[in-house]
Amino acid sequence: MLESQLQIAEMKQLMNQYLAQGLESASAREKEIYKLPQNQRIFLLSQITLKKKALNKLAPEFHHPMIIIPSRLALEQSSGKKTSEFKQHIAQEFARTNRIDTFIDITGGIGADFIAIAKTIQEITTNSKIIYIEQEELYCNIFRHNLPYLISEIGQIEVINSDSIEWIRQNQSLINKRDTLLFADPARRGQNGEKLYRIEDCLPDLSKAHNFIDNTQSIFKLSPMLDVYNAFKTLPKTHNIICLEEDGEVKELLALSSPGIKAKIVESVDLQNGFRTAVPISEKTKTTINFSAPEEGHFLIIPKPSISKLRLGDYLAQQHGLKKIAPNTNIYLSNHHSKKYSALGRVLEIQTVQPYKKSNKLTGNYNIIPKNFPDKVPDIAKKLRIKEGGPDFIIAFRDFSNKPYIAICRDIINIPYS
Figure (cartoon, rainbow, N blue to C red):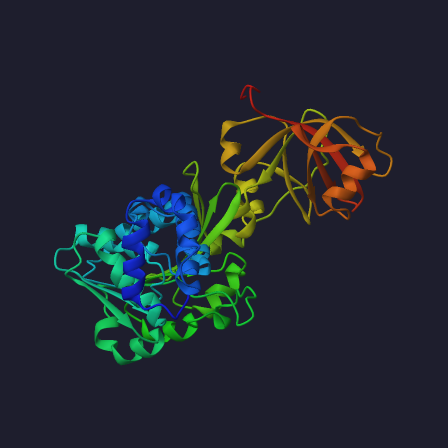
């Protein structure tokens, strides 16, 4: 949290004095800043650091020199540009189905998602009611300061400092309507800084909020560590859980609910290349998969993190006619290369397959990927006397008999499609 001894008026004064001309100007005056009282010095130095990080993470609106970033933790938990843009897209999809007159964010924070969605709602619905709710008084005051720099149409935006669950309880007539869109991104850190992921442990507890939204449309951002299928049980009105992936990493889980929709769907979205795969849970449960041993000349498909997170590998492999190496080894096989496999994950061509314990000592550099394997990457590199990196890959896995093997592979770049 920012140095709480500072009042918002003093923060504004310091921002005007040192940061209104931009980061370069502030950095040039660091010697002067170090002579300030401790709480002012800490505030300004933290703003310089946080605003540099925000340049890469947050949307351009948050790059204005007068924007105040509440804290390092708030910036860490806030959504990045691409994930916020995707939520804009979801809000547009909701608005096409049901008119949205009211948008409420019950966990305001920095407001990255709030601003993204609010702009979309204002474009679709004139005179829409837009509400930002935040439990931390300082965050609310900072957001009030930031708001004119973030969005031009601020007349319809209400900023409320309140416990969100209690506010929902007291405003049922406004909340529980089909034309209301509710957004939440709970705090996922405990009192000692530990990461939390269970819905019931985060603040606010969205399982309680869920009791009040029978007729409300909602977008809830959940921990990427959460078990997706337990989330359907904890938030039973949820009809769709979307797993957002960026740069080969699961960034967010989004739980969507809308009145009248009963079919349960999980969806994988790769924000880098736009691959989007939706699968009804009822279809996923019908999956059967065949197994096969990898051989030289075969192609390995290692599922994207979002597909693995949703446990869709077997289903999608079945749809594409792929086979699996072993029940607990989530690597899939094809005897030919097809462009469509790139939507599933990384595709590699096998050069050779060897038993791990009897494998010849190798030379050079390799990217090492273990799957259902007893040794970690450093141990594999040490045993094989190789260094990590380079253009080629070693996939370490257990076969159908649970025996450890390695497959030496090359990336499929420049390999023609069949």
